[in-house]
Picture 1 (cartoon, rainbow, N blue to C red):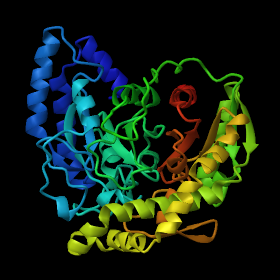
Picture 2 (cartoon, one colour):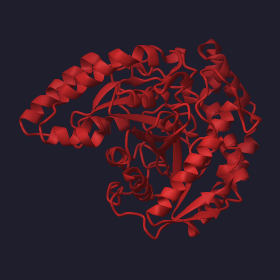
Picture 3 (cartoon, rainbow, N blue to C red):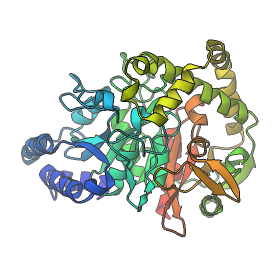
Length: 451
């Protein structure tokens, strides 16, 4: 069931929170043993909360727009009284004393936490198949990755264990699994959603974001999650807009840019699907033009340096004290990050605003950018090399190549399903906009979805 259908059913009293919670938990019983999407299932707590929310519904009181909606939360995000593992051995028994800001917002809006979603260990990887609790499998092909690092959140939503999920995105970790699992995922403008209570990977690149089945549902969820938090130094000190306000305005007369750097070394099926999507946008009255982003190589390098330096700051001491608490692959990435010299990090931060400004010059020509979310289809569990157009490519940097630039620049980026491969694997397209223009991305995504 889509989020918008469930909200309507709750308002019209055709559904109860208990109905939705039981349906979600039934799906967990059916699917989770094989998909491994959830580390912790909150069955007792969810049913207890659902019973309370059902009584409130019977009394004509709804807490908020998510009253009774089952959601899953990535296990990088703290939940009071519910273990939060980071997908890591080191934290397998950690139980927080407080909810993260996003969890508090979900609860205040009436959401029911069904479970904590599996994640690539410490969120440091885009495949979702490296976790102390085992790999997450793709609901469309269980031999394939679900994408990461918000792997479990996407797999849980795609398989019906929850109506919506919350992930975090440092180099693409909301959009990558959303694309791989046929869902809609938003990395909003940096600072739009509070990071308080979320275990960091890279402080100036981390973005929490919603994962849903549908564009309108995603906008509804972003409305709930957004807002200023004085306890988060990066939080935007402004009143967020209504992200559903432009959904039905159409896109006639607007301009879409196809950025050349995003179309290099792309799987032919993915390129075909995204270019077909461009044709569909033309049919809705939009102009489609080719654009360039000359600063892209520098942005890509700067993002890589930033994530390495900031991840090293988080993990250096922990790695030295408990090296056996890390998987070999993640430990190797952190060990490599620790070698980075301070001047490299300082140098790219000094260029950061200039590079972001250079990226945003493209919006003088186009309202939004349209690009593939991923250059490759979901690979096999454990696979680390893939061949595209006869060329061997490393899987990890390939998965990150098209999503990570906007983590560095902070631009909002929305992944929307746009087709399937011949083998039935989902393909996603990425809509990218100016800072603060999430509602415009939803407008384009919704127009496409209605076709």
